[in-house]
Image (cartoon, rainbow, N blue to C red; front, side):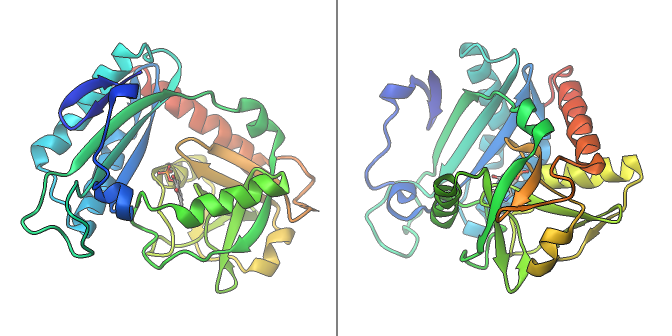
Length: 288
Ligand SMILES: Cc1ncc(COP(=O)(O)O)c(C=O)c1O
């Protein structure tokens, strides 16, 4: 695989970053994952906007020009790696760069490290139709979950707990309400209304989450940014997740308890279909 690192296109095995890189030492950086369908980016601009916001919150100075070139680089990588047909993802990571280890930022600032790779993705259409299981766990993350930081320790520990429990995902609970999962946003459907945790510093407000709001509006389904209490989860008609690589995934069993009738409900299935269609549309235009 060809990847991009700090201005050069190199074979993945030849791409090397310094041991002093603050991404390696501190997790001092941000990342994005963008979905690609038949060579077209899905929601590229919102992803880039979130990346810029993250960089600004961390005070990492990547020039506007470099930001603007990221999608061209990604396009080149998709072509060179033969990923312009079918589904793929672009991974973009920017760290504060390599400098002698100090907690405070290097002064003067150093060049940020920019890494981009592309990968094949096979959507799990079967699981989208069948539904998946989850377990609830405490949300032990910090209170700046709106930053898409490369420091994903609580998220990977959560996913491993799901793996150990033989389920697809965790659903995280903070202060008695559902927040999100380790890598997707959570929606709960009751009496035809969709509920999800409000956009705030307690969740990473997904780009796909925004697409869910738009799709719900198009379908005439009411959606509210209201937290759902932990003890109400099992009584919901439907539960589903959204994310760039998760798509829309119905959750039909939580903590061993069946949700609804045990298969993805009508709201979930409508959104599964609509998202699939919207993604396929994005593949018809080479968007920038
Ligand atoms: C914690 C968390 N929440 C939500 C999401 C979904 O975000 P998006 O729809 O932008 O992929 C992600 C994606 O990685 C995530 O890590």
